[in-house]
Image (cartoon, rainbow, N blue to C red):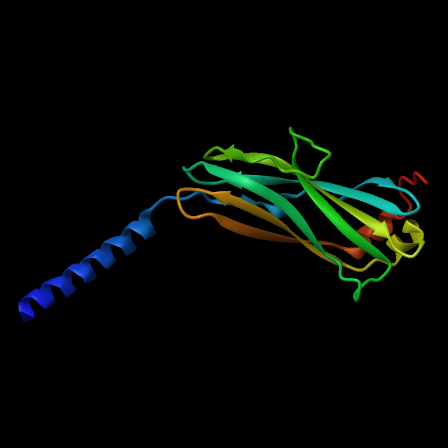
Length: 179
């Protein structure tokens, strides 16, 4: 009887070890937004109540596995408690698939390849303030690009941070005024 219990226990331990080794060796993609290679922030437009800023950044898969990118979006962190004069929204688009509906089309990123993403941030003035004045007094704003995908492992969400510095925005305050 003891031998049967030890045999079952041994098989359970062996099965657990096989699952751990399989999970560790199972390939997956290594998809990353390479923030270190982002282009300088560019002022697309500026009018009384809105400023549109953008930059390009590579989304790179540095592995031998393809990745199904199901969603990609940007989340600006500009709480009204920190800066009550403006609010921010953003979009992420693939450079060769520009859209105006804030939708990121799910696509497959092949192994050892990359896409260029265009990250667009739109600052909106609050309380009738002028956007040029807001940019002159703007604070540093953190944001994150989220990438949702599926490789051979489970669905994942990866977050890549960047900062829009107030000094950059102050320099742009004298830029392309459309208002």
